[in-house]
Image 1 (cartoon, rainbow, N blue to C red):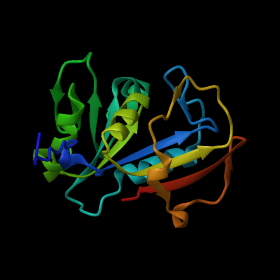
Image 2 (cartoon, one colour; image 1 turned 180 degrees about the horizontal axis):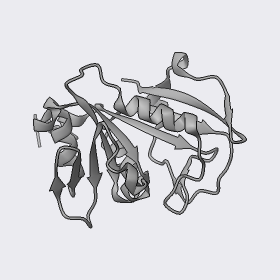
Image 3 (cartoon, rainbow, N blue to C red; image 1 turned 60 degrees about the vertical axis):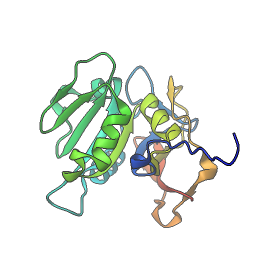
Length: 196
């Protein structure tokens, strides 16, 4: 080929428009036996505040998750209130109502949330896991910020946060919390932003 340049785009509408929120242990473990291996009320409050807060009262945030993450939420709390819940799965049939969408196509639903018909009611898209959904969003360059709760203990997890290219994200030092202790566990909150 002479004189031609071919550009390959990665889902341009969704590039760097998703936020990811996660709690990790000292080895970046995020779960064990399809459950959180810790119970931290302050972390749960941090999660709820961030994933529900909007600047436009006419809009809601979307929380996108995999089937296993969805199933790990106690039934009495499903769908998570005051948010549009989006479940990505290959095993459940497609479904839509005002508070819940079940989709088999990650890229399509992300683009619909960010720049399609759902963007009219969705202010921010939060990726809440689990491991496979985190990895897919990171690999596709969808993530613009990470909110990370770092727990200073190894929980012998069986699922991990992978795929983060930490050199491409910079910590917002002003957002780092003081060291907190709850249920005998030390932890901190951190915010990382994608660096162009």
